[in-house]
Image (cartoon, rainbow, N blue to C red):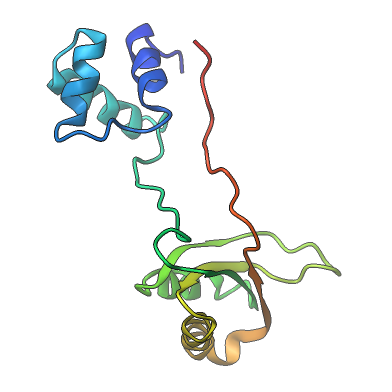
Amino acid sequence: MQLEAIDRQIIQTTQAGLPLVAEPYQAIAEQLDLSAEEVMQRISNMQQNGVIRRIAAVPNHYKLGYRYNGMTVWDVDDKHVDALGQRVAELPFVSHCYQRPRYLPDWPYNLFAMVHGKTEQDAERQIAIIAELLGSDVRRNTVLYSTKILKKTGLRIAG
C-alpha cells in the first residue's frame, strides 16, 4: 500500500506521541493545515488498513510505582493456547498477552503474559492467579522480571 503524502506527514507528526494538550488532533491539524476531522478520519482509515495498529498510552511503570514487572511465560498445550490466552488476556492486571513459537529444547514456552506489581508479593499473587486459571494445562512456567527500562518506540518514518 502506498501512503499518500499527507498520511506520511500525519505519521511523522505523531510518531513520537500525540501532543499533550486538551485537543491533540486539533493541534496536529493546525501543524499540517488540515481540519481536526480530516486528521482523525485519515488516522482511522490507516488503522482500518493496517498501516497503524493502535494508538495507546505507553506508561512508565517504574514512575507509577510498579517495580516488579514480569513477563510470565507458560508451556501449555498448543490445542488450548488460544482459549487459555484469551482468558489470561482478560485479567485486569495483564497488560499484554500473546502466543509465541517454542524453540525446543531450550525454550518450551508458548504463552506470554506481562504482569506489573508494586511489590514482589503483588506480582507473585498475580502469577498465582494466572497459574490457577491455566490449571492442569500448564506443564511448566517461569517469570522474567525487568531489570532496566528500555526505550519503547515503534517504527519511525524519516522525513
